[in-house]
Amino acid sequence: MKIKNIFLDRDGTIIQEKHYLSNPKEVELFPESGPTLAAMQKQGCRLFLVTNQSGIGRGYFQLDDYLKVQKKLTQLLSNFGVSFTDTAYCPHRPDENCSCRKPKTLMWESLSQKFHLKPEESIMIGDKEADILFGRNSGFICTILLLTGHGQKEAEKLGLPCLTDAWMKLSPQKPGWPDIMAQDLSAAWQAVQNEYRF
Ligand SMILES: [Mg+2]
Ligand SMILES: [Zn+2]
Image (cartoon, rainbow, N blue to C red; front, side, top):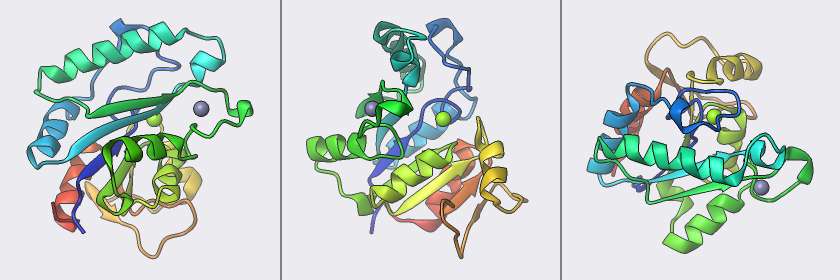
């Protein structure tokens, strides 16, 4: 199977994790994000952003703030020639029990219908267990946990082995474990290029 679609978390994956980010001025790309996303697109992969934004439902900020942050992110990435095919967000609080908050899969279902995507051609990259479970619950061929953002803490919580290289494959796996762990987005892309075809 070939990888055609790369699903990405936003906070702690593409941009610096800022607690309930709502100010576009605070959007800060990781140094590797622009070049890596550009390389993914050059390889022919479509990029999709899927992000939980419960700060909206919690009343910490407004939908409009999210949209401004998204616009800033779009601008920053356009400097690298990068654009998402589409983006999706969940605005709900966890206690609202919606179907779109990762690890649930409504964002996948909506995007896959809209763009006729196949889970076996899709991978998920994120910095939290919820991202990994989102990819697994959606039937993706590969899930990758980054150690940026909340990733280091999440790796410890999941009992993952220490990362001694830029990335490593995890097999056999335990529940909640990703297929691959990587130190950052660039290392994740190295792993994908090494392990999969396009
Ligand atoms: Mg995140
Ligand atoms: Zn939701």
